Length: 562
Image (cartoon, rainbow, N blue to C red; front, side):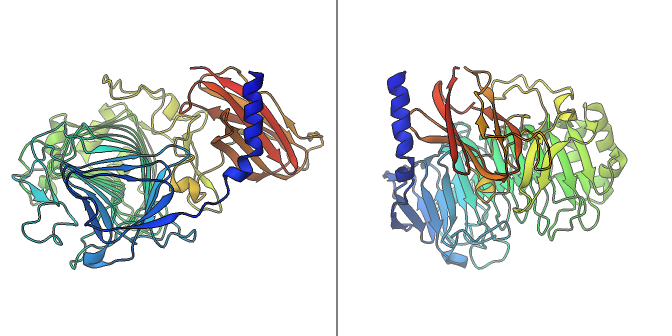
């Protein structure tokens, strides 16, 4: 153990050297570079620049190392840049919480924000799973620009277990440019079309897309931990027989421009063609653009179910939604009330295959009573029978500005999200939780890898604070206490005190001195601070935590045992 600690302390002496910037090579990638059967690896020591649409051909495999950055050229219309994983190809983009994979624009030089939308195309996954289209079709956005005889933009098939690869800890930012000559032909941040259940999609963020954050066209893929932030149109959109299982989705809309938080369609053509869209979704936190916001866009409804879609939402939070015309929290298409199509989603609801239950609803411009935010009587009946609560979810903060650093969607003490009767999902895919919504009280899983965090929209992870500069009982010295409990699994509390306002950093390192978590990096007032550290993503072992307050540095060790 003494030798391990000596190794760790030696590594600390080299931390400053290890973070020295290393010049990266820039590799231009064109459509001719990843052909059928190729195995290609993109590494973190390069920046890869997409020149136009890059199709990963059928049979090819693209591996992307953790920490790799992919930038898209400034092409427009038919020259707009995008990465397309075609049917039969695979992508293995596996980042980590500390080293995510970043897809962005070549203009992303540190000056962009949530209003910088539509600078390039996006990422498209195409698979061979079933849809409810009568035949295989070309995906939205690319179909108008591929010539006749080029079937690389087609999706769908008969293999519901199709495997398009793995995407994990990936952020896609500033996408959604118009592709091709026709207007309204945008690609989403992530487009998922006909993708099968053999594919792994988790910890993926779409930030500041000029169109939707995520759009699913049919398929059976399962997803976890998706973030849709500040996108111009819908945060989540599905169509064409989308199914699968989904847990831990977070959406937050910008006040300036937004569509629906979730636009849920059953079909793009014949709405009575099976398989019907019928995904199962649990533990979402959907945050609108704000009660008093009037964003440009088609966001008259927070949730829109139409075109014969089914859906099952459980254990979720819906809040903070308004629009220029007041807007409603939920609308279900009903052909008896002005619709023009032969099939509607009301039929699905009345057949018990459209359910939103065991969820918390609050913060709507239309009002917080069922009849106000869900004006359709049959929707009120469904919500009233499914264990929903109308109460303030008491989230820690929804301030959307960098200056406010106020986005923290975890439920505070006393939140009904912590006491509501939850739906037992009774399926091994779904994690069992003790809370509604996408976040537990002690784990903001967006920290570290998202653009929201990098651009400093997220609130600091201080769970309780006491003391200020006018308190006569202020600490007299910088103190870093031993964490408790220790050993721990997976959470522990770290206490520290500072006698005066200081720039404070609290970081965690592994035994080799590699940073695994940045817990605090902010100017704090004098006082005593308690920090609840969640190490769920780390492996068993000894870790070092270091407090830097001004010129004072303290280091202690702690042990995680799983």
